Length: 165
Image (tube, rainbow, N blue to C red; front, side, top):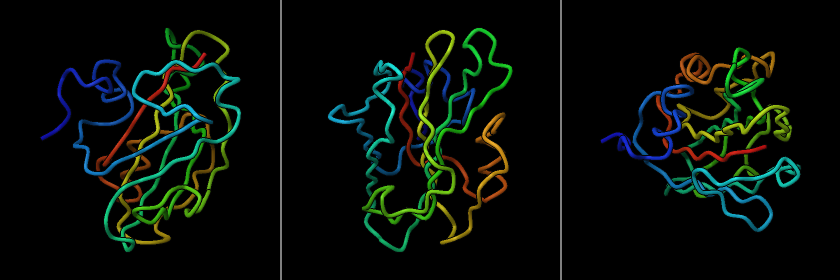
């Protein structure tokens, strides 16, 4: 069963603008400093300077995951013609661990919106195997759906978003 129409990811169109409807299959815990990220939390760019701590669930260390962090509201929420901007990409994250155990293919670049309040989505995909995902050539105009298709990642297994200004 996919996400409810009242799920925050659906309401703010992360599901729709960035990814297709999916089912949450695994836990995704994201923390900036001492702040646990829940859908829709508001953070200033000064609060997201350093990469977050990300922990994922699961029960089998032989399963690997890819974390994508994007801003779909570039350059502004009212005119996102440069959608999406890739802020971070970590692959080969073993289940039950976190990004510290993965392979950072695109280093963390903190969100710093210049116009309006931007949605920043962290999206988790299950990989078909280890070392099967590679870095894109650019951050600008990244497309999460296409990326998922190219690397046979399928639909997300978890996601969370924050608002940043």
